[in-house]
Amino acid sequence: MLTMIPQLVIGITDLAAAFLFMFGLKQMSSPVTAPSGIKVAGIGMLVAVLASFLYAFDVDAAAKPFLLSNLGLAAVALIVGGGISWWGGRKVAMTAMPQMVAIYNGMGGGAAGGIAAVELFGGKYHGASQLAVTLAGALIGAVSLSGSLIAWAKLDGILNHPLRLAGQRIINGALLFATLAVGAYLAFTALSGTTPLIPISSLIYIFFACALILGIMVTLPIGGADMPVVISIYNAFTGLAVGLEGFVLQNPALMIAGMVVGAAGMLLTILMAKAMNRSITNVLFTNFGDISKQKQGKIKGSLKPVEAGDAGIFMRYAKEVIIVPGYGLAVAQGQQKLYEFVKLLQAAGVIVKFAIHPVAGRMPGQMDVLLAEAGVPYDLIFQLEDINDEFAQADVALVIGANDVVNPAARTEKSSPIFGMPILNADKAKKVYVVKRGQGKGYAGIVNALFYGDNCDMVYGDAQAVLVKMIEAVRGLGTAAAA
Amino acid sequence: MNFAISIDGFAAVYVFMLAAFAGWVIIGHVPAILHTPLMSGSNFVHGIVVVGGIFTLLNASNGLERAIGFFAVLLGAGNAAGGFAVTDRMLAMFQVSGKPAHPIKSGHAKARHPKTS
Image (cartoon, rainbow over all chains, first blue to last red; front, top):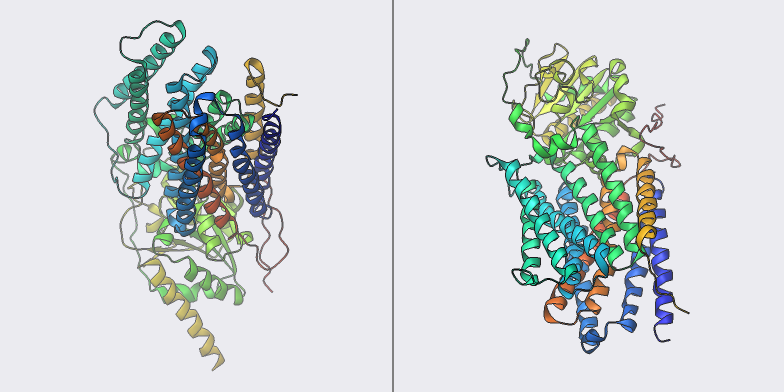
């Protein structure tokens, strides 16, 4: 009888959490309702976590003597883990967001793997199907943990170059096979009751070690530009692992939340890969940099540098300006100055729009967040398919810190590694200004024909410094006219 | 009466199938502008694993199980709290230019031209 009420409360709160998660994610389909959506989901999480302490009323007999100290440990782990993460999440710069998501994702994978480990060590699963699901969740969770950590290191710049061994695919294949074989042997001995060749706990250690190494080896060869897709895949993996462990624990809230994220993550991964014009297998098994070493076609024309102030004044007298911001803008921390410049143009009657490429930034949608952070209203921000036809009518396309996403080679040059990638048609505008640090190449390491076009002028310098000069020039006009 | 939940065999497969379908449909309607908050938001949702971690830790009966259970709760809590913190922070930044918000539908958002008068 003592267990009935807690069971009922846990059942209701978990049901509520599952509903609130789905409702919250649904709310996220519009920037208007999204802020309340995450809060709704947050309430679901809080309630479910608090209610989970009621599990204390119905613990295994063997765990009874440890109950008080276990409760204490749970409280400490919640406060320490949650507190550190919360603090980190509040403090992290928006440019470092992809790394942060990778870390949080790895944590979730690790937690799912840990739950699986306890089930395996304690032999707590019931029957063959639960054991199989536990092992599957353990494998996916462990791969997600170690893989996410490598992804974090790459995005954070700790690991700079893709590491690729000879026969990488064979090694990874062998690792996957070894993990599966150990798992199968583990399951066989556990279910048939035969004595394994080595103690079963050693088998479990080997299984997890193989899975963790697999995650590292699979992620190491992937280039930095492809990391967003990789994080998205691991996000889906962690969701899947959580869903599977939810089944083992007979907790439908975990099953539903995990599987919703697993499916959503897979869809998101496919959308991102499409935006980069690459298939998922292509991301996982080939190196972006490898292909770009091919010889490139000759480019006619020359680079024409102009002064920032002149470019600013030209835009002041234009009718419509479309801005193409890239990661270089965020590196220079120029978003605030850019919006200041935009407001000046708007005050002068210029129509200003932002054109965002799906993979601008280091994570899809990151540029949207960075502009929002600077206060740019989202109704000025347009996605590629909505604005691409408008470049032809625009007087000026201002490209800041972007390169590959405006490279016309993607349309014409079959040998180019970015051939076929949808690009922003900045080259079709009557006038193009490109703000760039120097004459270097973009992430993909290819020459950009846009820069050599007759309608294109280069403004060299740090994005923020260039924008300050443009602002000064346009402001100077205003006072001159007034005087 | 007994409120213990038991999901086995085909019932579990049905739950998984419907949840996966729901996730697919829900995300299919998110505009590209929200892809980053969405990724961190779904990342937050799988932080529910912390509930499983607490269950595991409370039922742990030896040093190894307790240690692993402790880390499962620690990591799960980190996943949930961090995921919420960054998502909430990002979403609060999205604003519309000084007029009533107009919901953007699907990936083909048609935002209005800024009024220039």
